[in-house]
Length: 249
Image (cartoon, rainbow, N blue to C red; front, side, top):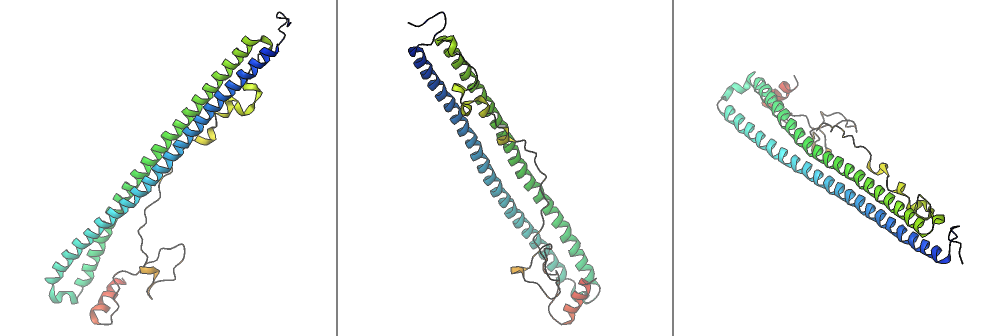
């Protein structure tokens, strides 16, 4: 017969301790699995939010392109109306003045539309970064809650072991198994601080069609976005020469 006062461990108590360890260990694994699923859900949300942001960026580009095209049509219509009333005046310096006027107007509208496009793109990226920040905080909350839940299981396990027999009492990971320790729940590397970067500038695509270049263009390089020279006339008539002369100023 076991000596109760000496705390001698009986086979019955040893079996009860093994059962309690198995139950507590399974409880810890359940918490770890829940945490794993939660973190996977946040990864899934980040992927969806990134896909949505990319779609919104493309939608913004389409709208800006359509708006810029309409502005170009309006400028073209206004120019054609002006040219119709100028007659032979186009043979003189008026041509150069008109070209400078159109150039300045076009540059102004380019700046207006590209600035608005940049603002729209920034708003999309800022919204994505905000969602990413929220998910990172939620990840840390989930890990913190899981760590606390495992510590509670460890405490309950230690108390139950003590109740079975004081000589069975131990603290820390369930059954001394490090894989079940509460420290496995807190992994801050999976939710590092996200410092939102400033987005880059939107650069207009000035490349020629199919990357072709005219004889007036320098040889393209990877560092340059070379495009066709604007307002360059290909003919050899008087008006073409006049246009090219003014354009070369």
